[in-house]
Image: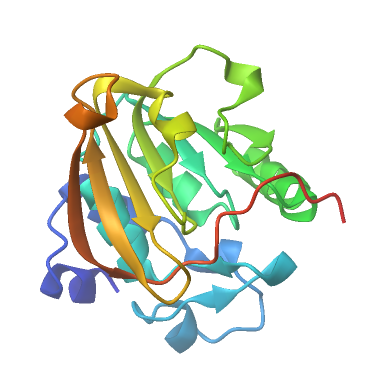
Length: 208
């Protein structure tokens, strides 16, 4: 898997080492064959109609963050916890948010059992994270597709920080990297870096 990621342009050595170390099967249904688990272009269904992203997508989004050890990262969409664990392996201080309560409980317990110290929250982050009011992050990673750039999230990003987020309606999303040069939206630099295909970012908590 790591060899194929290198061939596709993933060059961050700490990221590649983290993906080499971390068994993807810990986060996936246990009946899958390795040929499915480690296909870099295969997303896998998990609980609540969600997916664990393709290994290439995980690597691509993470590399776009330009992550350094010790940075604070807000992850929107905890899902299976695979991306969360990758960020932790790279030395980030991770705060992660999931709106599906079934996934939240399951993944929080899994991450704790693996001794990852990510702080897990149940919520949606459309209008910020009440539990972390006024806290700003070095990086924000969104693993669900937003119809437009969420200004509530941008308020949670430090000046000089980066957010990586799929933007657009389902079926017509672009992966964007946003550099926050100031509080005014006019100062934000937005790069569109290719097509994306993520489940939609929804408001509210789902307690089912």
